[in-house]
Length: 206
Image (cartoon, rainbow, N blue to C red; front, side):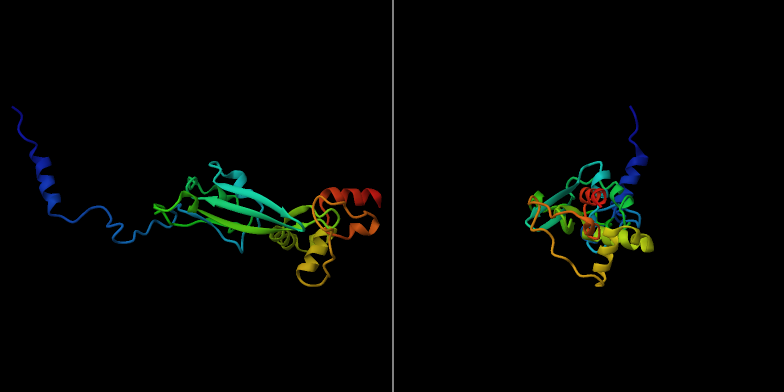
């Protein structure tokens, strides 16, 4: 007959009268390590709407929707926390390195609807002044112009856009909206904010 495991029994009695080894969460807040990868958040002021985060997301947790209503066009970026695997690829490949960042929030449990586990931001598009088709988000154009610095003056669209963003050029009235007949393209059209198709046509015609 085997003797009882005295050592295990001793450890059990010892643990019975000793404090808990695990953390006291949720009664006391738990502070994760500094490099902990938690819930990702869009930072609207730093996000340019370039969609780089959505392109590298392996779980497809970032959704991009472009909405065009008349002369207004917006891009909606949505991060779904219930799908996210917290890999950090969105933060690592962000154009500004601050547009989307992982927090240290780990407690995502909720009794609310699953649809509430998301964050959505909107970015306004820059429209072509000839055909009124959306080109890129406004913030992305500003970021590129600032990043290029003096080199932005080699591109007519960037030059004009940058001057308008700092209030040194007037904003012309563009065509009514996407899908309508494009404005006539001539030599002067080159000094406008144009999409690649209209700029190519303007260059060929001039």
